[in-house]
Length: 410
Image 1 (cartoon, one colour):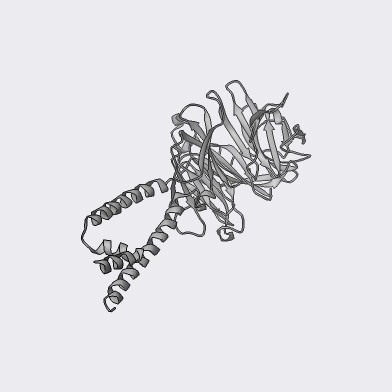
Image 2: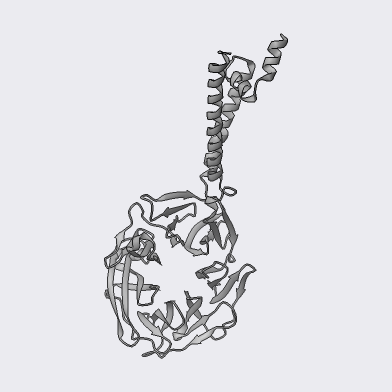
């Protein structure tokens, strides 16, 4: 008996675990129950791990305010917002300390855009100004070829030159090129039934894309509809030319993002996203539908060239990596956002702006690096634990075989 007890006490931990798994005993039911519990915990873990990590929500505006536009700095530390408060539009800066009202006496803001390292603002009656992120606005006062229209959309890479949409007293919208001295003669949409909504300058400022709508492409009683995409070329001194690139039924196009030459094989100039379709604009070719995707509520592109699309209810993101063949779905946690109005990139974060369940406008901030961080991502931590379990199982199997084969020969 003493020899048997000594032999049992002398066995290694792996050998004792192996015997428990081989011999019939009350302990086997305990370990079987433990195995089932691990399976249940693993299933729950997979459900939780499917939710994208690094997501937080925060309020942005009060219930009676609407976010008309927001433009973030490249590092995500600061933003300029155009807010409609029920009485008028106002500008607010936003940083870590929260929003601050901008002093713009005598200036009625109507549009904003990033411009190089700062921002550019369009206002009523042809007013324009630039802002560096601190201090006061610097007026931009080029000469207009005729009566100044309201600047309802503006896009530039610097305060010296860019593109704008003006709306005159009769409601006619025209597109212009501008520089520090002159605003070009305006050009209308090539189709009388369509109207322009927003202008988006390319990174070099040589051309611009214009998004619009066409009332003949949908039911007029339902409001603006139809996909209209225009290209604008020219300069303030030489005049500009507008050509139609895309004209189709569907929901409005809402986003233009330009693609770096280092991504997508250098073959794609821009992504154009809308509520019904997602288009890529190849170099020297017409728009093409991005396969596997339909519409979205907002879109953006990150520093690696990955496209991100948000669902209208703020419950899901879709990413399209140019190095992969298929789109990937990402489930978002329920943080109270009921409707997404726009999407933007700020530094390494994806920002979803929209309506909150508790009222007012808010934002959902997604850290795009969190998915690769084991400390933040349950998916990555689960993969690490899986590797550990597999290694442990292999060691157990080898130990059991060793125990059977070599112990019997002693």
